Amino acid sequence: MAVWNEVLTGIVLVAGGYWIIKTIYQWRLFRRSIYTEIYSAYIEYAFRKKNLVRLSESYYLKNELGKHRIVYQIVQAKGEKNPQAYILLLVSTGIYIINVKNQRGTIHLKCHGDKESRRPMDESRFFAKRMRQRIGEPELPLRAIVVFPEKSELIWEGPEDQEIMVVKRKGLIEAVKNDMASGREILSESRIDEIYHFLADESIEMERNM
Image (cartoon, rainbow, N blue to C red; front, side):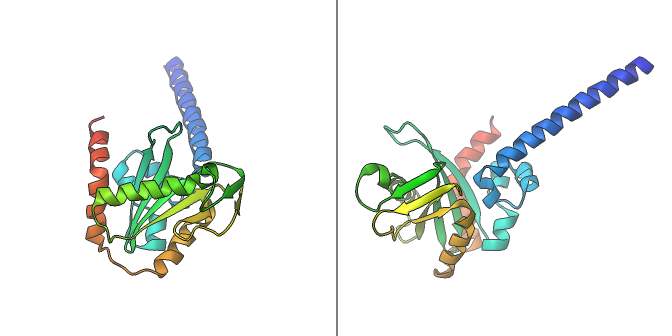
């Protein structure tokens, strides 16, 4: 009996140690991700992350923006090597299309000019156009936002783009709040849910069948 107690104790200690190491690793990944600007804390994110429906809402965003839905999209355009990460944020004033970038250092941006400095804006315009076509509501406000890490320096060469917001991560939600304040509420809570399910139900069904 004493031997079995020692074996069980050892198993519990190993399992506990593995769980602690795994949790610390996942927490560190969370701290470096865009999720810190979306969910209230790692505990909320950890609770939601394995379910697309749960991921579509946030305690933090509900407090800051009211009724909302979140749709995550990974898109790889034809001819592009790297996929782009987009977050669609559905709120009462319309849809924000958030293009998440990972570049650090000095970022040179232009509304017009060479392709490389225009790329983030062009990507966002193209994706916004595709979303508008998919939803099929030409009058629905869609606003693109390009988000860069905090450890980047954003330099506009010429005038800033008036159609697309460019912000750093920690300024994202404040920028959305300010922009919402200048708009008008056109989507009811039920309509927000309808658009969300129109965009996300295929992915939700795939998740259920995995």
